[in-house]
Amino acid sequence: MAFDIYAPVSTIMSKKLLTVHPKDTLEEVKEIFDKNKIHHIPVVKFKQIVGMISKTDLFYFLRGYHNDPSAEIFERNRLQSFNAGEIMTTGLAKLEPTDKIVVALEVFKENLFHAIPVIDNGELIGLVTTYDVIKALSESG
Image (tube, rainbow, N blue to C red; front, side, top):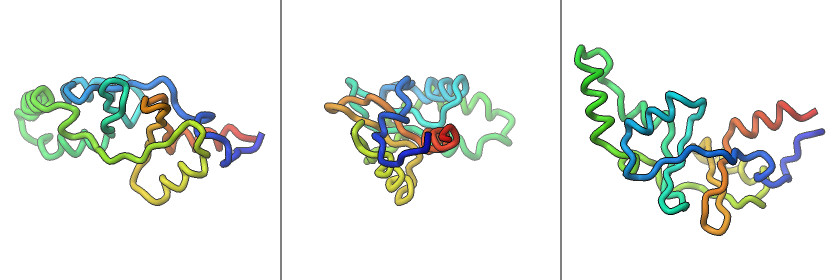
C-alpha cells in the first residue's frame, strides 16, 4: 500500500504519549527522556497542551557543565530547581486529527518543529513527528 500524503494525520500519529505538567521538575523530564526512546514531551495542563520540551531543549539547558568535577551534583541541583514550564517551547503549531499529512509536511518544511500536537476539542490526543512520517513511508509498499 502506497503512502498517502492526503490521509488524515490520525492515521500515523503517536497516541500513547508521555506528558509532563508545567510544574514538573526537569529531573522528571530528564528521567522520561532517559527511560524512553522519544525526543519530545508535551507539557499538559488539564488535558490542554501548553508547551513542548524536546531533548534538544534539555541539552541546551544543561550545556557547559560537563567538564567541571562537581558537574554531576550541580546538574542534579539545577534539574531539581527548574521546572518544565521554564524551558518549554510555546507558540506551537497544532493539527486536528482530520488534517491531512501533507499539512504536517508543510509545517515540518517551513518551521523548525519536528513534532506537532494533534488536538481534538481542545484536548491533546496525539503527536505527529517527523519520525512518524518516515516510519509510515518506510512501511508503505
